[in-house]
Image (cartoon, rainbow, N blue to C red; front, top):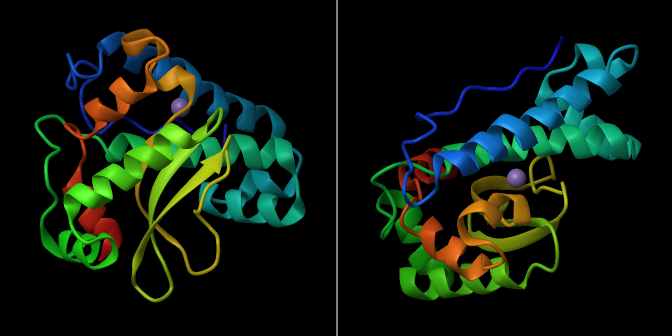
Length: 197
Ligand code: MN3
């Protein structure tokens, strides 16, 4: 099989109790895995089977191949998302990303409020993103379903939050706001800084 489910950057119970082991078992072990399985079902016999995952996302977007795009983008998005979380993380950012947040949003608290509002306001399934633009500045974006800033010209993904219901239903039922609150105690700013650099 050409595509594989990447390992988690931490143990499945490492984010407990903020994000339960059961959530990880479903979100990673079932949802993320299903996107990989689907891609391995749909890609063989097509030009996509010999490409890297990154190239599959870009090419299938250009081609308008929804089945391949949705599954490959969701594989990429989830792998990126897991790295945006870490045990004993969260709080205010440090380093270059902190300075860029101050510049773009007028401080971490203002950024946090704006990102929270965007994540809450994403209607239905999707993602909230912190994105570095071609000018090096930061902005907040939301995308629907599998859509992603990844592979879009001039955009670099810095941080993301999955706001599909499957991300929070086990731990928080329908309360997306509670899940977003939890995210701010798990935010991996070290990873965000690596992406921003
Ligand atoms: Mn998800």
